[in-house]
Length: 297
Image 1 (tube, rainbow, N blue to C red):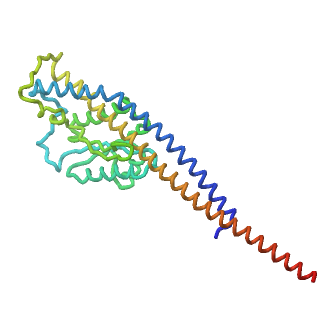
Image 2 (cartoon, rainbow, N blue to C red):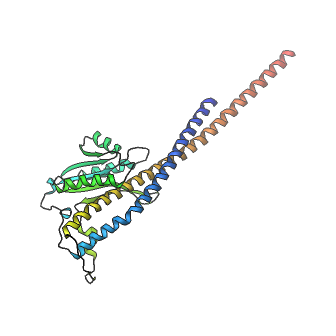
């Protein structure tokens, strides 16, 4: 059994660790609430954009746009597939990063030529260690998701899509269902699918009001669609940010609970060791007193 000093040192060490994990839990809790608020503030605008695209497609189903071009003439083996993988810059978040990386590896099993666009340092380290080439790494984005950084990513992807360097674009991120459950999702970003805008669900007898688009339908779509794609990426970034901190909260809460259990067990061991030491001291005093008594006789 360890002596009293060793047990006391371990208790103090675990208490110091518990202070750190508890502080990290509180910090992640605050950041998660801020992220959810940012997403809630931005959602109405991008939902409105989605509704306007659906409205244009409903009134003018013959309209064509390069972002809706599925390029079906290209065989699966020759298609160029891009993936935006959103991981974290830091660990201590349970299986958060691992789940995203495994979801991307499933995409990379698809036939075609794959390009990786990584957001997050841990994702970059992982794919480099696995021997995968990274097309572009977007730094300083995970810990501060905003529209400016989302626009940089969307412009890069849309430029390569329009130039024929990419035929499909996916986003792999983590979406927080609730405070207890987070799920990794794979969203097809480009090309856009008409069915995603509810075109097929419009009743045949729905009254279609007259609309006029200036200067042309193509110009309006060319302005709306990039903003919509930017909003999609922004939403994924903020959702991933909130999910990461939710995962870290769960991990730190578990670590804090484990530390409390360890302290409880160590306290019991400390009390037993202390009682044993006191008993030993009493036994030695009694033995010494008896020895002195025998000498006097």
